[in-house]
Length: 454
Image (cartoon, rainbow, N blue to C red; front, side, top):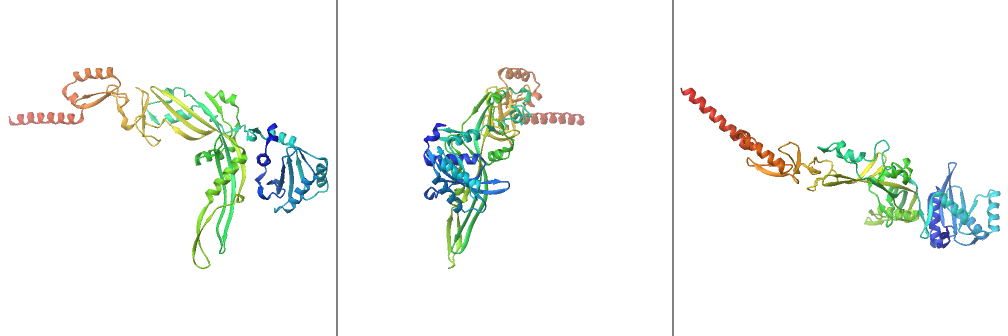
């Protein structure tokens, strides 16, 4: 990883923050750069049930001598942490003999503040081991875990077949196989704690004590928070990931695309911290000692937000397109095995108007392949099956418009209509049919009256 040597000192600290977070350390954050005091990264670890503070000095130099290690030892002693503490020095170069000897002596003497040394060769091995790669001068996230892109208990096309079950006049057996590509979209699941206390001369006026867990779309460009449904889909299924094996998935899908993570973990962490600070910023009112009401905007500081974990994973997005007659129906969703969040539903939608949604009733027109709402579907007069208003041929019979699949069906009905007795023709239009019945009744009454007069 030759690019590691090209980083600036601050960029190297960002890299190390990513590395330590991937190694499983908790509450990883950088110390204030304006007051370094010999510690660049602060974090915590849990060993045998005991939580321990860790102070890290990052040195982007060719060699690190004993004075740097001694300075860190003093910084550990002054680091405020309720529990045992230790230190690390990480460098892109190497350690001098006296520096190594000093760290070893601390360990041999069971010093309360031991120091671990990590040189450039160690860093490269660690980065390879935890799946981080250098990209454009930064360590970019590499991930080989994904949520399941389909339910292994069913077929890839099962969600489409399930969606079409809501459509009248079409059976699953009549559906052609959809075109089904999958895109593995990078996301990160963020867990963070926000703890802030806001005080004035009258005491505490506001507190924040919150644990947040949310998901961020992590493709190139600015990070974007996922919707609540998508966030739940990811966080609830992180325990059931599988290896992203593109060759294996190509056997199931028509096309497979794997997108890259766009930024480093530190950049996602910084974005998450800013987002949580904005989320928890509020204006409160309080009464002062002089009984005057004041308002104060309470905005958490960056140090009030601690990111506990950033977990990268791929979120499969499947897009089916089903061709029926003259129409193509898209159906797209994020998926984690049997669980899905629909992002586009072109099946539960009338092709003629804006009616959409699974709460509506839809009917399939086998004549043209359209899906229609109740306002755009009719009964074909000759065969008595559905036909949509968009493709139907129409003609008025007995003052009422009739719908036909095509001109051939219309002409066949014309012949039937011409051969009908007048009362059957009247039955083609309800008002006329009622009138015809009334005429027949009157005629019968007249006949009966005439017979009675005899």
